[in-house]
Length: 248
Ligand code: NAP
Image (cartoon, rainbow, N blue to C red; front, top):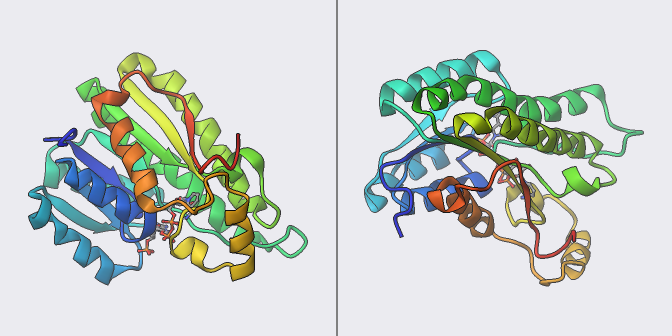
């Protein structure tokens, strides 16, 4: 179903994993997509080609979401290329896992910069257009570890908990302007980010998931399409878990 026909979305970190899945699902729903990447150039080129398959405009932008000036320039470029946009999905993220005893300052700062400060950068730069249109949708990709914490991920958990607070505050600030802001908190989703761990640990994680399977990128992307469409028009300020029942 083309629930997003004639809409345009911005997706950060659309070159791989969940972001790539979101770009494809949006395109399948009739949405034009401007997506960013940082290093996965070849993959980004392939994703642009989906534009013919789905008969929508898809364009890649190399832009570091943790850099405010690049984010501001990015929005200018997207407005030049697409005229306007309706949806912002803050998805770019990284992990630099370690126990706090071993974590260095750089790993702490980098994760906060890329996961959390990026949401400020893009949201701050993108909302002017939403205010003009008196309509907009922001979806932040958080994580269940932002709710429950995780040993070895204090930097990542803090960044995602920060996203949850940011999401609720933006929903409160901008609801009266008809701008909705929600976060999706995925559990264990199979992507490059989760393939780094040790096999036994991953198996034990899966065993603890009530639905007894890891999630896939479509599990997250389907919810993005729903929230971005008018079907989600009365949902704002929520942190919605997509985790197979792991955190109840
Ligand atoms: P992934 O496969 O490693 O992909 C990460 C994406 O972010 C890539 O497209 C990457 O682009 C981009 N990126 C990284 N740093 C960036 C930067 N500074 N500026 C712009 N783009 C940047 O990770 P994933 O598993 O799909 O994760 C996507 C999001 O879901 C993240 O926010 C993550 O925290 C969240 N999440 C994932 C899981 C999971 O189980 N996988 C669970 C909960 C939440 P390049 O490759 O081009 O650098």
